[in-house]
Length: 568
Image 1 (spheres, rainbow, N blue to C red):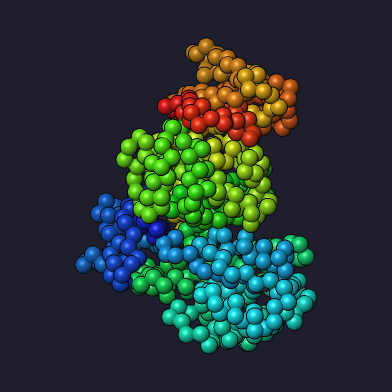
Image 2 (image 1 turned 45 degrees about the vertical axis):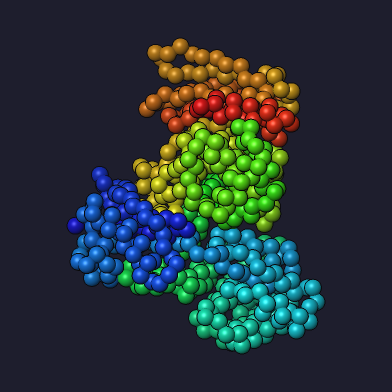
């Protein structure tokens, strides 16, 4: 019996399973399955959705996942079962977190960046420098229905008085307030107070001690708190989701957040990237967008749920490539918020959906910029850090044609330089991140063989030119049997070049003196070698900020023309 590994992701709307096995001497994706997630009601509904996904895998592949009655059973007692199971989760409401620290810049801000990958909603922030008395502080801690408390602050050997007072208040909160779900507490501050915090609060397994997230004054390392965060996340979700504990016991798996799982792979791709560029992942769900960024060996992310209001409706409408009645457009957006799993049924619905997706990504990128200034995103100028690659993932992207998904990303991210856009069609990054600790070679080999669909190679022209002026000339070499093509690219233009199937398309860039195409300095050009992709090579000379007409009709026409240019 061949050795296999299984990965499960329990998403907000879909539960997915991936089976990995050796093929031709290396690890490869063997099969996938997807069924609707059920976390409401009793444990039987939740377990049934997992069993249905595993039954589909078991039916088509030589692996044992269920007992003779088609139910979850102890995998260690099933002959032919996977060697290990990775289990990730994004289902359930965000965890309500309280951030407690000695200062805004050195304590609370690092905690905001920390919780971004753990499906948390920051419901309360307590800055201990605000000189709240103990009673006022306690009232704030009690009134917010917090599920996860994080305490940070101070370099090792530094101030202790304020932190001790907060620790004493947390003891009262933990012991005196009756709760069905016990809150989790993480201490990641001044290490001289770590044991004091453990002994004072007396929270047992609900207390998690980590190294100081503030490694030195002005320096932080969130990775030292990841182990504690994962333990707290798992303990909370096991209490909150009926049936999850049974699944964990039978599968012998650890529960980790889906974004953290995908973030592991983003971090790996960035650290192994020889170009020195960052890696960016967008994960689309029905009602959220996750942005996960790896740059300069730093991982940050956010799971952003956009609140629907007049501002987001106006923003989304500005990205519509059809002129739409304002009332009809707003009605669609508000109904979409009520029914997030709705599938666009008409061309107009699809247009509205893509416009909303573009606005959602813009807001998610802005939200990550707010908590992580080093992300370097500007709402007008776009992403200022160069990335290679940019990866699009999530169930929502399956509903869009390749060129439509690419345009959503281009119009929101506004990337710089030369970038490869990839589609994580099977959401493998999430699957691989949860299985990586068991078989580190597996993710590397799977990504090399089955990993991504190549969407496009995008070349952005940054030039101080007026619309209509030539900013770049290109020469396209498709091989010895084909004549070379030349094109003159003008400011404000979006140009698509088809790539050769199962071959390499070579594009020579000859920018104008002040045009920067990502070769290191303005005016410098050279060859770009593009492998076959769904859309091809896209030259984006539309400018930064994106140059859109003020009039609604003209703006919609420009957006429609750009969409038509990249694929219709």
